[in-house]
Length: 355
Image (cartoon, rainbow, N blue to C red):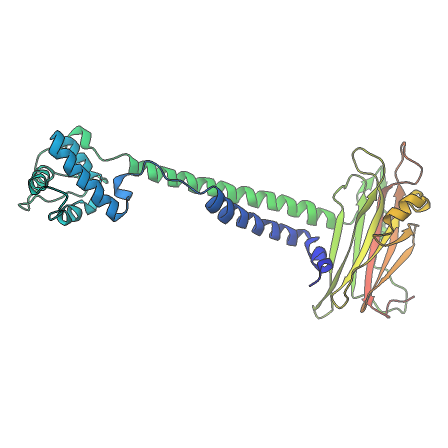
């Protein structure tokens, strides 16, 4: 697929929105979230450590108790290891870095009373297989880190839900602005005038085969994002190409944009290039500088009421007919920018649409 075809696909709002969403996910999660700004955990409880680090922690707790003889602190450190504490203590029974008497003393302290795990519900049995009725000291109450971790997870889930909701709202708004609103045939009023009803009628000469695709598109002053595109399909549903109309050039400064030229394009899946013609206002067409500047975009054509502009590719033929034309008024030169412009786009297989 060449660059021109890719550009035409990306000009479709839904395709562009999908590509933007995927790129946002790729950049936001792997690159920013995991690569450049990864989550860094701090102040983790001993229960969350690796098994080897838990062993080191309990070894240091035993050594500390042999020095300070603080039974309450020893119980707290034992409790913070969670359900693996008994297994780790058993594994240290023959540790050469610890004195046997220190291990026995520490074991006696932690098994002398009822030792609760961080969840505060699962008791450890005593060496004799019985539970002690001694109350747990105030300093040994279940750690608040587990509820804090759960609250943190809940906050992340809430943020993720809010982000998804905002994405849906923004996506829906963009879909309405870029697709639904632009597809409305202009039966609205512009400057107190109603656009002609003939803009709603299919157009082809008597005896001529009907087009395989027919579209109506309207630009109105103030639609600074005007860029309509349409898919061309065969009667059997086969994709044949695309066509569309978009802003090509403006004149003057300020808002809204003063559109002096639009470009009509035709993409044929069986052709290597996209055909484009630039429909220019009377002033723009008669200005040699503007014409020269827009020549690179396509063949210049001056817009006239009921004018038909022909675009041909390898297998398709498009006729763009000017249904309605109105120039804006103001300080700019006369007939220099459009107030409204309605075009009918009719597509035939090449050779069948000639008049």
